[in-house]
Length: 91
Image (cartoon, rainbow, N blue to C red):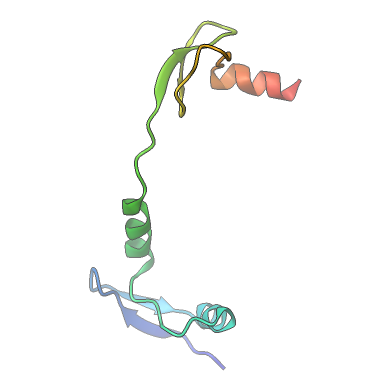
């Protein structure tokens, strides 16, 4: 029923294939418009909207090594490096 289509990306101008499987998926989801961007440009657009993750440096409560964590550590709870955290999680 569906056949592969070659489309042109509106951002970079590169040609990309809109496969029969993708067309079927779009139809199942009720999408009416074909994709306008190639995979690389879609991914770039998605990632541009995300704020870069901020990391905080602290000291591991178990081994004393420096640890980088994606949250602001507070003094009321211990913070562990990834190795110690994984070790404790497996116990």
